[in-house]
Length: 490
Image (cartoon, helix red, strand yellow):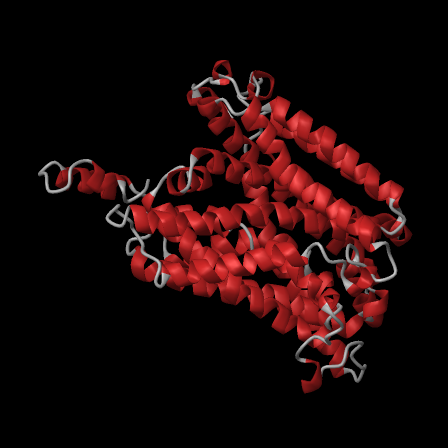
């Protein structure tokens, strides 16, 4: 539904006017406010709040910085690409750079989910523990069991082509984010208003994080993943009546809402839970439990836990088949994956890809049972997820510059201002975040830095670069099965 479709039918020809009118009549227009809310619901979450709460007031700075150098460039650059080229990240990178790099980009978009689901379900496991027994939150065996059982349940649901999952995910913004987040912030304010001292100092001296070497800033890398996904929402830019004016408004409103959802709950947690006691996976529930205990309302803790779990599971089900379907479509057209991984079940779902992904997820989930500190495992998998996804963003920024240079007259519904400068900032920030991710954060100062580097490096570079390289080298003409209409049944 790109605006590029209209001029492509004949610039200057009389037939272009009826084509434009037909498109206008068939387009389902959305308001820029509605797009801002869609973007907010897909990006904002309470899951990252404990990670930044350890910094106290400095979390404001640590959220604003990646928003300026990553969120803003990603939003506006992907909007230009989406308004000019249909087909998502593969189309952008393959035309801007090359088809092999396009495959690498779409692979990274898929591969990040292999580590994303264990980290997401690690959060689900620790949250669910507060419904039954809070002590389970620190149990690696419990965490591994929840990851494995819930993920395979999700595969079963997705393989049946179940409809209506998206409704659960869209409601997650209200059920599992806005309501619990608002309650947490309001009760946190009341907590301070009752004369209780904040667990983290809230003075001007604490606006910036304390510098203790590069390791003290490594947690900021996780914020890049918190802001990721904007390139997917940019596809809706063609549904705006005036993209040039309305899309920037939408993005700035979404940025404001996302920052509020990220920053305020993180601050509330830092008021209530001391940093040294904070779990990176269970921190949200720790804060709710502590503030409810202050008011004698601890019976509400399990209810909030169920709300958070429901929202996370809805998001997982929505994302489960999405990236893998994009990889499937490209692989059937170009022959990038062997036929076994391209097979569809009777519901038109790429079940074999989901099963192989599930086997890897199971192995990763078992690591929670083997690594003594659940928070350490959660953090490592989150970093690997970020590293793999950042490879895709590096390619996207390069492709955007190349497309502006090679195809300056290609029709675009929206042209990002200062595109080259924004791509430069976004590329530099992404590359810096990728490199910093290999440095253990201060919380791992007593651990084995070499082992940390080997795990993160092996996971990110092996999965993000080596595996797609091997698939590309082994590809055969017989692997091509260009019949995308079969997939539409899902």
